[in-house]
Length: 257
Image 1 (cartoon, rainbow, N blue to C red):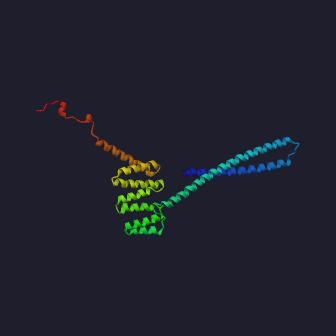
Image 2 (tube, rainbow, N blue to C red; image 1 turned 180 degrees about the vertical axis):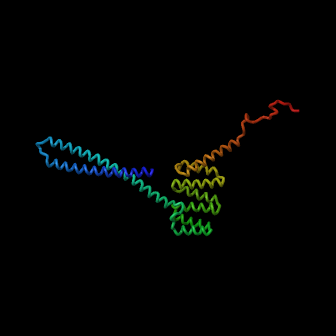
Image 3 (tube, helix red, strand yellow; image 1 turned 180 degrees about the horizontal axis):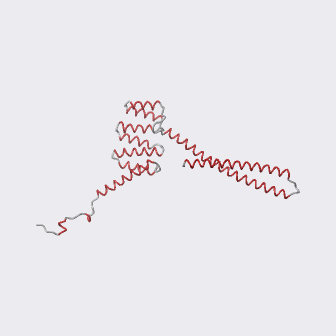
């Protein structure tokens, strides 16, 4: 939801809750005072006054019910909006903590030790330490992505990197993170001449996470790939017989010398 619209809803619902709550309380207080006054002054031999009093009481009850209903609806709507925002905020914080792609805020000594080993150039040892850390903390998938990056960039092992990324995509990730991980894996597939796997994954990304920026990139790449495949197919197909040029000499009907 647009932030300006959400802010406007907060203002409107809060104002409505206050106004309806005040009017409901005010009319209820007035109604109760009127009922007590009528009870004190009512005389059995004055039926006209009794009818008038009952009319006022009925009207008062109606106003209390209307304003009370308005107050209830406004409070429920405000509570729903507030609960949604709180849940969304807490969910985002949890996802950032579980799937912190950049390792921001990481203070775990085991993970920091693995990164230090990597910085010392001991890549395989660093990978093993990261695997040990990931076994203890399986939800921190940024560590698995880090392992894949080391295979790809430091060890130039595209196959191992692809296998690591495939395992990451089996986990429950935020849509955007899943999408960009898939894009990265597709690039590796193309480098390994596994275009079929890359195209299948791009189509899956578009179908299941189509609202993400990664899916937009996937659609562009698929369009380019389809265009390239169409061009290649045209070049490979033989020309129809009607388009094959004949020997000019045979067209003129000349006789061989």
